[in-house]
Length: 129
Image 1: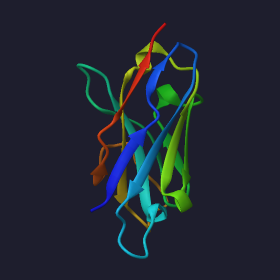
Image 2: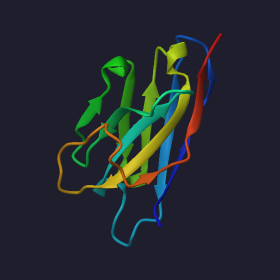
Image 3: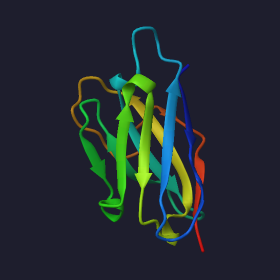
Image 4: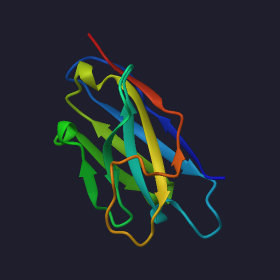
């Protein structure tokens, strides 16, 4: 069973940075994260889960408008890990951040809609002075 685990959350001051990691394991023999599209999502208290960014198997990325220029998604398929570099953090970025993966080897694009198969349990990001 494929598992996804997020890490790297914490408390940061406004204007600060964090790098979240998403490590995946449990692939079938012969497969790795390179066969999967990955998405990052977040959910703040009292709000719906929103998609932030995604990266396709070909490396194409998409971003929510409110995080463009501040967040950067990247993948290291050899390590089966995806990262979300978050800069210029704001208090409104406070939320639980989730990583999700979807087997999608033939598609050059990805979506920030929650159409993913495997989800992590999330990591808390708090932006506060």
